[in-house]
Length: 355
Image (cartoon, rainbow, N blue to C red; front, side, top):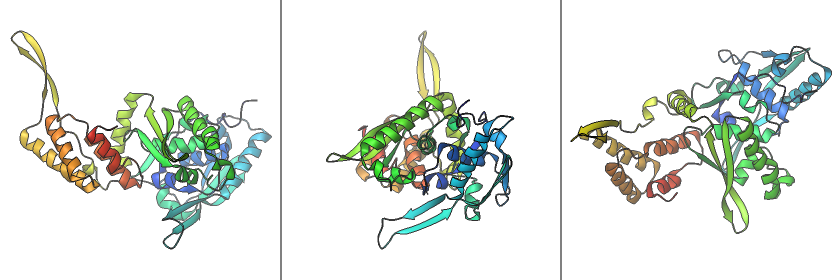
């Protein structure tokens, strides 16, 4: 009999999740099937009526026409887990200024024969209908993953595709996002490496549209305190579409105008003395001066030092095609989304050529 977890529909549906939802800390580690049921829910929810009960057929979930007892047993267990699940939103460290909120995901979960119904907690209604600041992907990208950690890490990395090439987490932060911060098993980094990081990157690379690797990014003495993921789309032609989609709708900026563009340059072939010479035509000087000034302002807003800004401006004037704007936009989007990386420090390294 085929593996029940892998035998879930063809995955042609698109999952859309608010980035606030993705970045919230899970209170309970879900089984792989429970995680897939949750994500499948986000492919069928009617976003125009988030307050309604959403119902789907278990047969559609599995992509088959006839169910056996094992299907029902596994879905029942997954639904029980989901009914007990909640998300944790916190600010600050434990102490006087600590704030925490724990909210159940669903207010009701029903199973009637082969039909499963979910009623979302209405406190999440805005997260169900994100018009901006969301991440979407095809369900098939997580369809064959066996590890819940792989699915969660995939979503966290997918948020940054088209905006930045790496994403860094402290070990404490990552454990909270994966709901394993209270499990002694993962106190040893070797266990986190073997059961979470290696497995997630392997499954993401083998079974999704991303290539993913990880590395230790920071140690305090001999203790690993931060890790960095590297991610890229396997089909680079799709990355342009992802970037365009992020610019027009998926980011949390209040208007599209906040995305800064590089100055438009044109490649031309000029015949000179019987020889063809390739040339780059740059924008009119007035327009370019405006872009230089805007770059200076954006770097100041981010908090880059005056000395580094001077280096950036000089580089930009010398080479108008320098790819500084994607880096600046990535930092601004990370700030808007509440992500720690990339930041002004990684931007400084890029400007000074220290990467």
